[in-house]
Image 1 (spheres, helix red, strand yellow):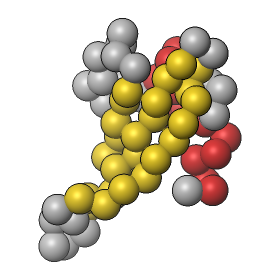
Image 2 (tube, rainbow, N blue to C red):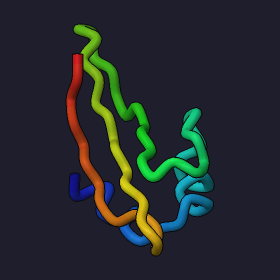
Image 3 (cartoon, rainbow, N blue to C red):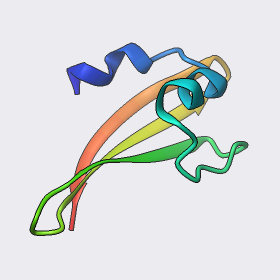
Image 4 (cartoon, rainbow, N blue to C red):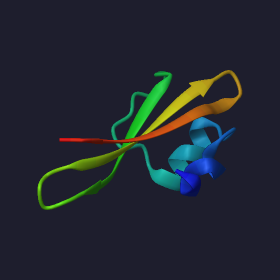
Length: 64
C-alpha cells in the first residue's frame, strides 16, 4: 500500500488525471480501481475514500 500513499489529499480531478475515471461516479465518496488480475481471476482493488479535502483513506484488497 506504500505505493499509493501519495494519493492522500488529492482531489477527484487530480485522481482522474493520474489514474483515469474507471467508471467511477464523480459525486460518490468512494471510488475503486482494478489494479491487477491474476490467472486465477483474483483481483487486486484500490479503494479511495474521499472527504472534504480530497482522499482521506486508502485501502487495497484482494477479491475473487
